[in-house]
Image 1 (tube, rainbow, N blue to C red):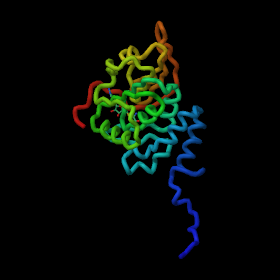
Image 2 (image 1 turned 45 degrees about the horizontal axis):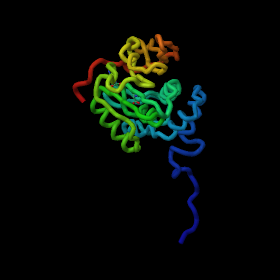
Image 3 (image 1 turned 60 degrees about the vertical axis):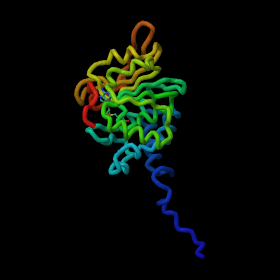
Image 4 (image 1 turned 90 degrees about the vertical axis):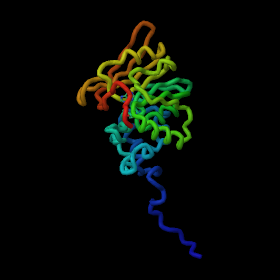
Length: 229
Ligand code: SAH
């Protein structure tokens, strides 16, 4: 019997661990990009982004870039996911709404931070895939709806937190109405590719307070549910 162990090439460690791995590098980039919330960082570290993108892109899952998910939609770059999640300051007892579930990646992260996530997506095909991924990760606190998220989910309102992951032309009043008093919503606002701003909105007793979190680039929020897949 040959008791000699194979030289450690690192090949069996996989891309998900070790100080020089893709994930470690990504974590470093997120910290350098201003993400300091350890709960958010730890959930991102535990959620395999490669599972949420088509196989040819899985190798890029640890790169800080947006990736295509089909239907001309994209999963945001990890730094944007992390910054939006951090800004939302999600607590474990909270009820959260996500508009634009897409691949399900952002939803997986939110669900691991809150009590229950309500996720709306206008493409049935994307939502079906997202639900399979959530099941695979044994995430069972997401209620999903194939529908028009710009209408929110009145039957489930109010929400403690709302995250919109597609750009609204203007701050959507319907969603603001479904936000609990004291609640927070993060939403990209603006027309076109180049002048969108990420807004953090707090609903107060008598109105709203808005904070500008800087420029972003999202696909547009489109009214109505998609009739084809
Ligand atoms: N959060 C997603 C990425 C979002 S891409 C992820 O983690 O992968 C934006 C998504 O918003 C797309 O899937 C798009 O179909 C969806 N979308 C756009 N307008 C919508 C609307 N009115 N209602 C629901 N979903 C919408």
